[in-house]
Image 1 (spheres, each protein chain N blue to C red):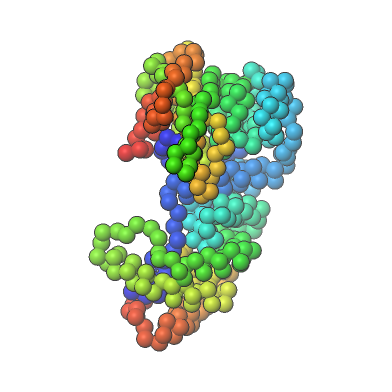
Image 2: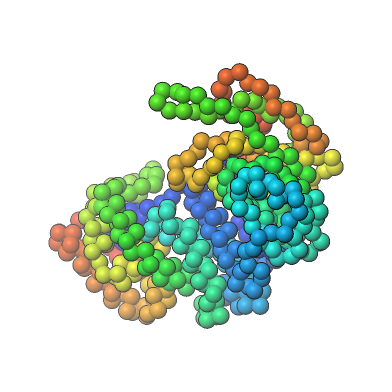
Length: 246
Length: 214
């Protein structure tokens, strides 16, 4: 064995999930950087109608819009062939010209703003906070959900697979939504425990979120109270997420 | 967070800012880069093809704090100078590694700290159940701290070459392209580096003389 081989064995490597999260963060920055270098409009404050602006103010999150097409008011879709991206400190929602919508989640805050933005991009989305409480355990504090979203009318696996693509296990998480694959009526349901998630390299895993699930109707599931802290089981994981667990 | 599966890597399509562009999966990097001069979105396909490898290299040299930033900066720099890409290079990896090396140079202190950590920490990553691999890992763990000290003490250019060959697993020719020199110059310099490493490791070379690199 040579020095080269020995040195190769010493190469530090990141866990696959962390590596993918870093790659996605790099990709997002690369895409944003190249967009501004192509002569398109740089980052600027959005010209958005009341709802989204109010949500942004409520969460004190700076909302910027990177536009490569017309900016739509909430509830209004942009014309085919155009795309738009709404960026907040917590999440990015990008509507692609092909009709897909990509969500990057960096922090689990502002569910109402996320829902409004997704709906304006043509995704019938229901985004809800997961109510939580904290209690002291030993020298630490745990935060746990105080209710379960007990949805029973979940769309079949084939619909889940066609409508949602998952990328990454840690923040920033990316979901690609394919609205055309969502039947009528249906809704995309997301829920997360309010909190500021951070990169796993900072050691913060103290937030809970559910991957998007397609429901067979557009009724928000009820959150059934739970009496004591329990394992985080709120909705059945969609098939692709469950497969990744194995 | 529930576990989610990894994304489908760019196959027939690459999602770029502003829409979806269709690419020929058989297209060489040179073709993609040339076409990206008029269709900038196509460069995203180059990112999707090579970013994981570049990120692994940057991570190894600079650690988790800078890996994503420096990877993004590497591809942004590549995007900015793609007009000067030599179309004779069908594989963009050596070119990208060269840019990554230059980006990494801006973080000398971070790399120095990283190498200090390597001197005191065993090699990470799971051991594989294969006798040869076990021998390699045991050797790496035994010699690791001393080898890391030697690498840290190398002149910058020697260290860059050594790590391109050892960690990026580039051939001499690819390393030469990355560093803007010739393969014969790379071979000669790497020989000097290896001699020095053996001397620094105490003169009694505990490692076989096998040359496994070209």
